[in-house]
Length: 181
Image (cartoon, rainbow, N blue to C red; front, top):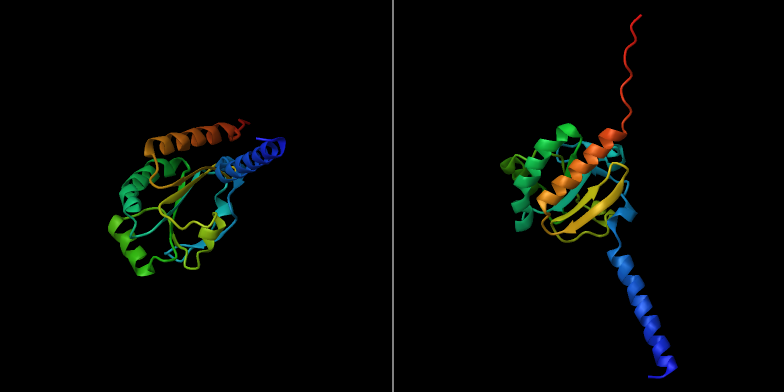
């Protein structure tokens, strides 16, 4: 191989490495998109208003076996950790009929907010999500620290959330003590 071919090969390898890094870069470098969602209860939910708390955003569909399988675990996680500050938002995909989403929420007794993404705006804002389940764990400071296509490891997710809750509790100022006069 001559010098020109070697240089071209090295350039191509560097380009592929850079593209690979950008494609698989740690999610912690990304910020949460500032989007507004409408829940199936008609509430408007601004993601930015949830800063200061760990947030799990999960895109799902009623026809997704993996989504259905992880729902009981998400419900259990929410019931355990929401009193400490965890928020979970389920976002139903644009191709999911709203009546099926409502029926699924009722049948599964899902306690966390469910939003309809009728125009796929949330999916686009999170990097053009098309496959489910796709989940994003967002730190209290608004950084996406974990992104997963497919079913989540609940043990790891729970530990990551507990770590965030512990860190956010430790960084809160102590309440002022009442003075005795």
